[in-house]
Length: 195
Image (cartoon, rainbow, N blue to C red; front, side, top):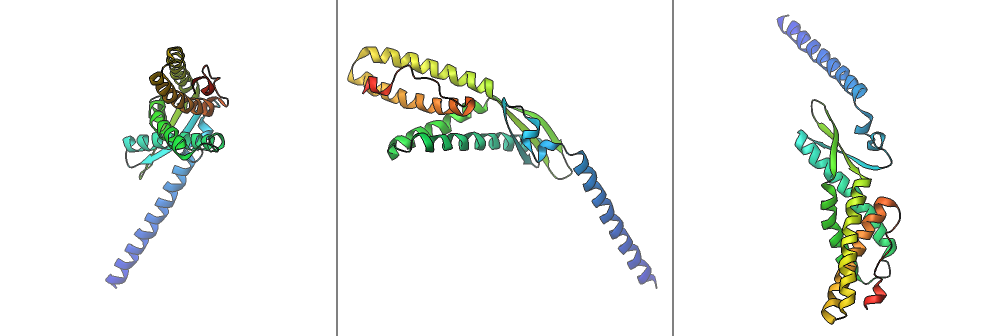
């Protein structure tokens, strides 16, 4: 009889605990911000947003920045595929590698807008401000254009080689600019001028 009473008590404790856990989950879901499952709900048209998760705030923030990088990279890669489809493999690889390095510079302008914690996970909302990233990219392109204009005036074989490298670098920046703005930045020096 004591065993039966003990088993009944254990059974009731398990049932009550399960009910409490279900209620807590419903409460968490009710208070959970919309951006956790839909990052665009918290973003304006001038922002790129992504959500990261982790066991701690730092891990969630790092994952959120990584998710922004993935979005940014996939948009650039898709831009490459349409633009460079006629290019040879070597040229394509150079530009692709360059863009991967440059996205890290842009990610410095990513900010963590919000965080949300549950008993098991932490969520972070990362936001890339497109106008800020565009301004940085435009400054980079303008600096390259100035260097290219000077090299074009030199008219030496060494200047031509350097000009070709800078032109490839500028093309990479221009892909990033196109992703951010929807249109390319006009070229100051055309590839035909230095070949």
